[in-house]
Image (tube, rainbow, N blue to C red):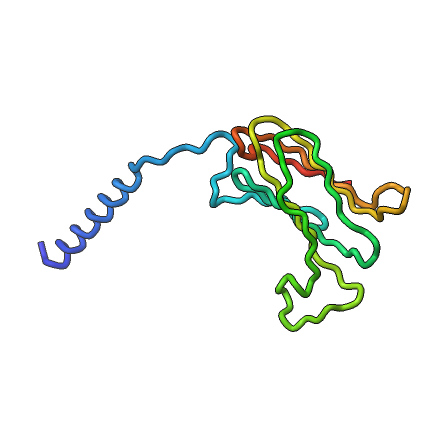
Length: 159
């Protein structure tokens, strides 16, 4: 057998050995429905996004308070708490570094939530003018289930 063939054969053997070793390593299986911390799940909405990973959830929604409209959130259930509720105009988002505040320009409203314990909750986000008695312009209902302080199910409905 030539030297080249021996080197190639040894190389293939080493590659097969390494693949076998890495294929047999122990990996823990995540609990049903729990998203690993480095694998955020994103649900797309018409005006934004719901993303969650483990015990944290962010809801980002397009907003334009210069029109009088604003997002509000109501939480039904004990297993979710709010930890972020802020609006940032477009020029503060860093999307356009040269942008100056433009009259009538919109931005993004961000809500942050933490899962606490085990159970279910409903988050209702409404986009409306506070002084109008007409039905809300937009409503997003997010149903969540939590287990041991982790989001295990998140479903969003828009109307």
